[in-house]
Length: 234
Image 1 (tube, rainbow, N blue to C red):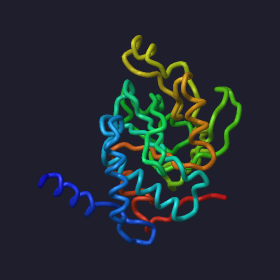
Image 2: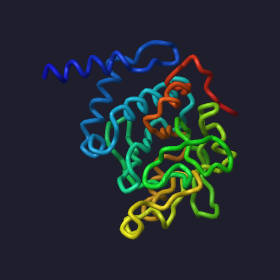
Image 3: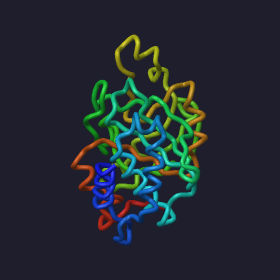
Image 4: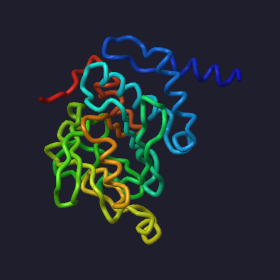
């Protein structure tokens, strides 16, 4: 018990600040702890990823940027592609709505995503906070645009056509044949059996956070470092 109390104190001390420079309230820490008790999140999501995701979500909510405040989506690229890495959370009810395999960009790595970019034509995934944009019918069928909020990190997402879509190479059958998922051109592609469900849950202006324990991202993030101006195009 004493060890757990020490850990909670350490977590609170190192929690990021809100846009007003005020530490996250104890109530938010309680929300994070409640979410982390969900077995599938505890077993598959890095605690730091969850903490940063919830912190950024509340910062965006406070700024009025989110139209769909009910859900928060986390993609944890610390995990290999053979594991579920995408999780859709009902923030209002502290419950998990969906979990899924998800691909990363082909130039980000093989089984694990280790390289990231905001550059058009890089075919790499981008880290950071996004807001879900419009759905449309494209070459991959029903798809969801993502608008990157972090300047220099993911704000080229719309230009790069980084979207949520379904793909046949995101499946357990592909894993059995190749030992990993197939890879996209930078999009978080989902299984054909799930992509419609996930898109319908998160569309309409919700928060999506793509995480990897990358020091350069943490230092440059405008959601984790509120003195940096947020990219919020009209």
